[in-house]
Length: 245
Ligand code: 6PG
Image (cartoon, rainbow, N blue to C red):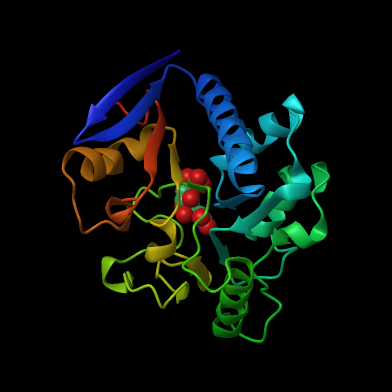
């Protein structure tokens, strides 16, 4: 069961349970995928790391819906600059809970290559993958799934002064005292160029930051800068995360 709430023109679904939230996210993902395939014969999705997406990926795999993975391309929103078998690797999480469990062609999986000599080279290589896939236009994902840290970061954008809003920069290297590893992340201009953005947040530890972002519109928080240029942003919150709204 979900309550639909509008706060400062932002569409927010608040769910009594995380299971209900997951159910709707999977259904909406499936719908967006099929629309993209019908309209453009391709579905391009960018997935975040962290723990929130895990039950969504598990449900998507368990439901075994008729996804056409042959025309689906999975990209990463961001990555920690660690080997792909490192416990903190976002790719490790995505591979464990989704990629290794669906019949997606290897060429359709676009990984941030942390085996590169340094983070800048990994970022450059990933930008090249984006340019090749999106024909050197500003990448426009059909769906981007984001999470939000209690400090207001999203993707691996931790500080507003590192947000580069120009279209030339597609991928950035960021570092943050609270983040153990160097990060490689899609830049804000790419995230905001998506057709659809799902912002997922659950748990009381996100309630404070969600109030700051959604109610107070605190622009000192990177998550508050997620505003699709020409697309739709929907927040999927459980009641604990939404308790301060
Ligand atoms: C990462 C993510 C990050 C995440 C938030 C929320 O690399 O950690 O991309 O932006 O979405 O930190 O993380 P949780 O989902 O674990 O709360």
